[in-house]
Image 1 (cartoon, rainbow, N blue to C red):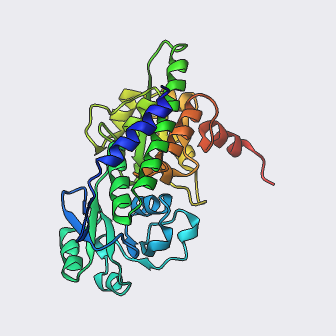
Image 2: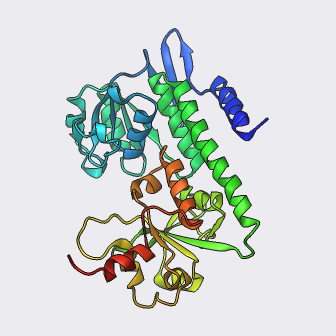
Image 3: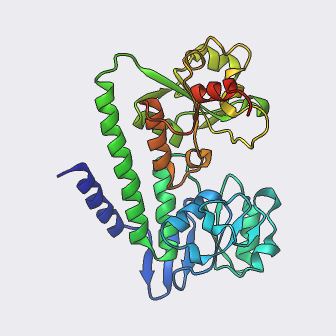
Length: 322
């Protein structure tokens, strides 16, 4: 049996043991905090406050159920006409209630217990997600699929992600047979100007590194963590991946890293192995597009890159003005 067929079989078995309970009284779903949400029927009106939840909802074919989205929800492009509501600390409960949703999807990192209570006191069901690693992403996809009555779509999406990861692993193993030395990577999730933060152990970025045959230089650090320039320089990664967005003003994220004082002797900088994904959100959000991020990271590492690299940044800088 091929790995792809095995994954499909496992997905079917998982679907049979779903956490959704179908009974005469409706659907009961357990969210990622162990809270039970009971609906009379699959949800048809949803507010998604977090971009990852919004992307999951659309990826399983439920975009039409969106009646409101948080201000950072921007993918797919087709949702941009949806009513935007405030999220995070500035969440306006009355604004959400006016949309009459059956369910609000929120993430524990951005929202508060008080906001959950306010919504539930007004008869709105709240499902809370928390996904730091890839398995957590799968759990979030299943939760949303269960709420929407789209369990099969959710499992198909998970299987698609798993298949892509397995295919990349196989290609990486073939590449590693020709490599003698371990290759290391540093994921910069917050740039120097805001205080350096890196992806550590237990994060989906750390797992993507492993899928692509790389060792995370901060694998000894748990979760997402603040780090120092000195630590990064001392660990001297072979590759640097930044998720900083570029808005067209000043140096690009890759150029900024290349120009940092004291970083010039690092292997990644000397060899031009700095990468800024073509869509940083795909790499930074715990959602379905992590499979696309894995493909792009693999292509960068093994010479088929997209997005901006250090070499491209140097070329642009050297080009004469029109």
